[in-house]
Amino acid sequence: MANPPLTPPITPRPGIMDIAAYMPGEAKLDGHAEPMQLAANENALGPAKSAMAAYTEAGASLHRYPDGAATVLRNAIADAHGLDADRIICGAGSDEILSFLGRSYAGPGDEVLYSAHGFLMYPIITLTVGATPVAAPETADLTASVDALLAAVTPKTRILFLANPNNPTGTLLPVSELRRLRAGLRDDILLVIDAAYAEYVDHPDYDAGAALVDEGENTVMTRTFSKIHGLAALRLGWCYCPASVAAVLNRLRGPFNVGAPSLAAGVAAIGDTGHIERSRAHNFAERKRLQDRLRQLGLNTPESHGNFILIRFADGDQAEAALQAMNAGGVIPRRVAGYGLPESLRVTVGTAEENDAVVQALTDFVGEA
Ligand SMILES: *Cc1c(COP(=O)(O)O)cnc(C)c1O
Image (cartoon, rainbow, N blue to C red; front, side, top):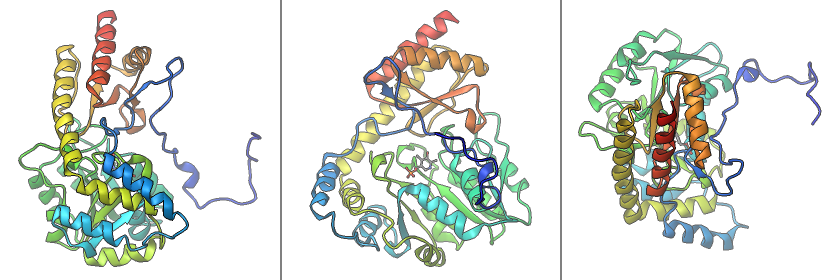
């Protein structure tokens, strides 16, 4: 392809070309026809059979527009989580919801706040709307710091994005800390709690965010079908928000922003409590086993509350060498230098065989180091 001209006749809005485009985790590995893809936190067990069947059945009606209001899915989500369906908005992945929120509540001159090793989409979305990203430092154990976040607030702050548990660190804030954060923020700052990994949490003082949404007019919780439900390919997510925010998002979103096969599969998935429970149980058991084995090897990993584990090496060279060792064993982990963690790698909790391959590769790596 020809290089783009240096001064193209049409130019994007200021800030767009400052964006470092999101680099997805690798899915291919030279010399391995079927590598172990542990770079994108996908469900180790795959999608539910019921969701696959609903998806296939939707194929017969591809000539029809989807239900733009996503009524059946919103009702199913509301029933499953005990929420008000009128205050649920569905999107093409929770990424789309996050982007709606950015477009609705921030623009040039505004600041959008997040924690230093927060999800990469937050600065990207901030720059797309012409606002200024502001990262607050985390604690030494890579957990978001309520004090540091509050200290970073300025009169220009409009949105605070917080993943809880956070990707890629796996760490979380208990609900008491979330409440302290909300209470310390001005009322005109939107707090977005991104609970993509909520189902994987096993912590007594955790709330995915619905309680805080109900307690005020300025907090939103986002969720996804890409992780516990194993439907990443379909791009399906949702948020629970105050009525005033729902009224905004319903104006901004496309009239048919979620496809019919995604809606159908989502309804089946949210009703398939068997698959959800199997996925949770698998992750609890394998996350613990993998984390224990990695620590036995002397590796440093923060306690994970998601379906992935962050492994911290001495420096970037060590992380690169460990990545090469895993690649040699057919495993693809995720580099997280883009998250400000060049000395770390993130690995999804996979099947038992995949996790064994991770441990084997890192045993070889540690033995050679
Ligand atoms: C995976 C993930 C999402 C989900 O994104 P989708 O667009 O729903 O696939 C959202 N937030 C975080 C922190 C994630 O890791």
